[in-house]
Each structure stands twice: as structure tokens, then as C-alpha cells.
Length: 147
Image (cartoon, rainbow, N blue to C red; front, side, top):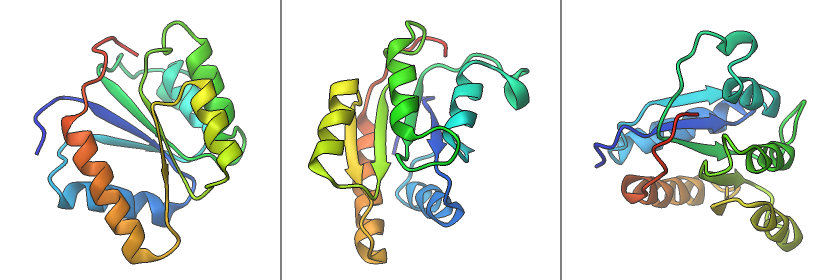
């Protein structure tokens, strides 16, 4: 579907959800590289090229799919950090989470998320949501600045 060289950083602590997300994005034709990290601390280390990511080269363009409820550093705290740093402030961040509390949705938008997608609990609905997300990713344009 898309030939853009956008790389996707997927922050998801649930291995089952991460596999399901990657598999369904591939099924609908998203060929972009998906880099999976398991918690918010790894997102920050990836963006800052620290610890396991010291040898990575800057990536551009990059899009972040971010779960809210993660160990070590929450998705909301990652979002706050990303949007406060001038190097990453323009990075598109899509919150992908089971949390559908309207206050949480509002808070994420206030902090600067690009979009908020609720992961449905039922498998069929989750797959359907991922297919719609994949269609969105196929057409989205992101800033072409190294991160």
C-alpha cells in the first residue's frame, strides 16, 4: 500500500498485542519497518540513542505507536517527554491503548498526540481497528527530520 520509507516505532509491553499489530499491518500491505520496544523507558532510550540503541543511525521519517499502560515509564510520560524535546516535538505520536477514559483521551491530545486509537477487547474488533489504522498509516505524511 505505501512506498514511503516511514519507520514505525511500536511501544507495546504485551507481546501478543505487538504480534497482532505487526501481523495485521502486514496483512493490509504496510511494508514499513516496525521496530518494537517493550516499555516507555526503551522508547526514550531509542530516541536518545542510549543503552541498546547507541549504534543506531538517526531515522527519518519516524512515527510512534504508543501504548499508555507500560512498565517503567508510562506512555503519557513518554508523550510528555517527546513533545517537550525540540528534537522530537514534531514526531507524530499515535496513542494505541485499551484506555478509553475521556479524561485520558483529552489529556493525551492536550500533550500533543496526533491521534488516539482505542484497542477493543474483542479480537474481531481489535483486528478491524488495526486494519483501519493501517489504512491511515498508508496515507499519512510525517516530517522528514532525523530522530
